[in-house]
Figure (cartoon, chains in turn blue, cyan):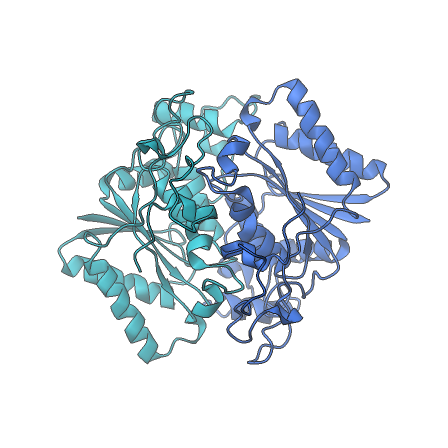
Length: 264
Length: 264
């Protein structure tokens, strides 16, 4: 398989860097081809702005979606963005690896999403009408590819548990797993999350890195999160609300959009 | 009151820009003092990196939390970050205004949080022990200040409703409202969200801007989201899990952390 890892940590000589090495080594030893987009070493530009749309006339107002759509259609986006889009086309599996900062990804990785996910590439794909709301949530350019998150967190697992004060980790990651990965068509695997990483001694690092290796060995066979496809009949169109009675008993809020309980 | 608006849209001549003007004009007409941090016009640097910690020796590994803590303690953070911290100290109310991009804030605003929220300022405040887990979630440097989000979204309200495919808007914004605003001590007001903004005609703009003016007039009197305080007795320490039986009937997941139903 071709595997792309997008890595967003400012210090290569860190736990995150060591886990990246662990993943790459394991994947290569399984015969996979691996590319790493190390956003900090690439000096990735995070903010979407006018310079992303070179053909936008100087006096014209920037409307991000339409400018993005226009440039994407004529292959006119900037070289850094096009290179990442090419890696996404190449990849069979995409891994986003990052430390959890303020309960989501660091700005530099959000900026990778904001810029690489052009209109016509990751959204605004397919027919948009009162009968069909585009190729998204299970369809789209990334259909057939797998994706997963590799996340480190300073807090304890309990703090991210069902009743933990930070909120349940699956819910905190829902906007990424469902909104950023499932949206353009990826099949989304359960995330790998390492907790209490500020105080990880050698023994626990050994355990965590072995758990990560196991996830790398099972990328192709791990059961994905069974998010409901938008155009699979479960949602009313165009309101895009889940049809009555389809929910798993007891499921409310984000859990409505999962067809059956997530594999544990 | 002193009011800080942190504004994150790349085009000042946009709906977001017009709503910013609406808010500022209304607030000033009420006699408030207003400062705007227009992140794009400030060319805000989004990514946390070594250059944020000028005293870090060249060969030393960057550990963000400890470097941040050390520089904050000696007033050694960069001037742009210190200026924003000063505005936060000055403000009685803070508004974050942004377009919803991929179900959260744009990278440039996430980078404002990542950089301005230094260790010792927005986290790592107060006693951390087995008896007390810091001054956070209702306590901290922002205690006594109010905060709210002003958000624009391209999708329909139904898509963000209780059963909408994007996920319920309150849950999508929970990591920001609870994890970024309530965490360092802000009292958090319900967000202002404008939907279907890609096709907002003059009539609807008039309605939306009047709704926003009304929210600006009632900043001091709007009932906040009643998030549970970490150190108010509702959570077990140090597991930080909600004690059994305290939940509002039927509440699960993020809703556990709200003491009673949010005001509608």
